[in-house]
Length: 173
Image (cartoon, rainbow, N blue to C red; front, top):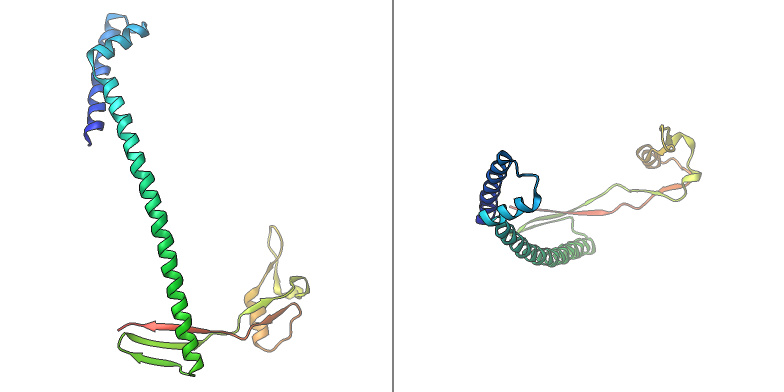
C-alpha cells in the first residue's frame, strides 16, 4: 500500500479509537468537541490533505497520459491507413500485370477472386419470399437467400450483384 493510503488508514483507525473512547465518556454528541479532539490527537486532516495533493498529481499524470494515448491512437490510425494503401497498390500492380501469385523472400502474396456481393437498390421492390417475419419491429431481409438466388441467375427486382472483387493475401514464412 502506498504511503498516503497507509497514513490515511492509520489516522482513521486512531480517530475511530478516539470516537470509541469519547462514546464511553458520553461526549460523542458534541460534534465540535469531537472534531477538536480528532484534530488535536490525530493527523487525520493532514493525511487527507496529503491524499488530496496526491490525487491532484495523479490527475495531472492521467491528463498527460490521455493526451499521449490520443496522439498514439492518431499515429496508429495513420499507419494502418498506410498499410491499406500499400496493400491496395500491391493488389493493383498484380491485377495490372495479370499475376495471381508471387513467391518472395518476405512471404508469398496472392490474389483470390471474391464472390460478387449483394447490392440492394430498393428494398420495397424485393419479393416477400426474401423477407423473414420477426416479432419486432418489422420483417428482416434474408440477404443470404437473396444473394444465393441472384448467384443462381434468378432476376430479383430491387437487388443485383456487384462484379466481385479481389482479395490480397500475404503469407509470411
